[in-house]
Image (cartoon, rainbow, N blue to C red; front, side):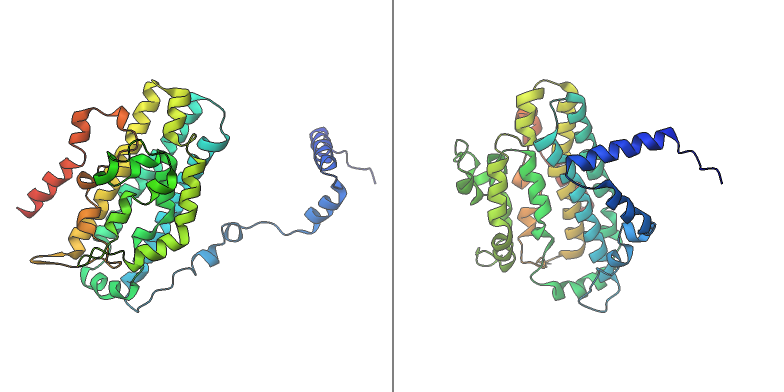
Length: 319
């Protein structure tokens, strides 16, 4: 029987593989043996579909609780995609305005998807079902999304995340640990009656506080704001994308949460507490927090109007 001639391109690829494994002190033939006996990859195994669909563990038998869990899991996956872009932009990308702009466009696209999808929370659950199962979730809260806090830390300087009441006093403070004590979201995680830290906040800080401080230290010179000033200052396309990111993350996204909270939790004359005891009426409105990642890119008038549009829209809804 005539031996089948091996394609020249395959031989070249085998040579490249041999060089690759030799450089690592490995034997290519052993890896080829493994490839010979390994099974074909399937879609469901590759994305661990069975595992993924088993990760919903409702605390009650109320059907819409599963929707609540699924949507938050989807949200965290989107946050992971955003962080994937941010980490490359901060740590590994070469200086390249088009690449930086591409990263920002991807981040903004993911945020657009999240903002557009929030109707699942606003309209995708029965109000009575939500109010029935929500108290079984105590003290857990969406407030405890560490990935979203990481997105904030990767976006800007720590000082821009300080509570508005302390921002001017700490504008020249450079110590990350000192600034961490006054990050804006902590003010929202207080008991409505006493002003003390909620258990939700205590749990969150115990698990992630050290990691947030370390991130702040590591990103002092390479967060997206620092990257802009170091390499792309004045680039109009990048300025536009950074402003889009600012608007989406600090106005549009929290406003979606506020709409949802208003629908499910606002019952005149009494206001229902959020599940983690967070002071959502003061924490969620962007006009109260005025968190702006890139303040130098906005006019004084634009910053003065930060989040005001929704206030007017909400007033008209209640009129």
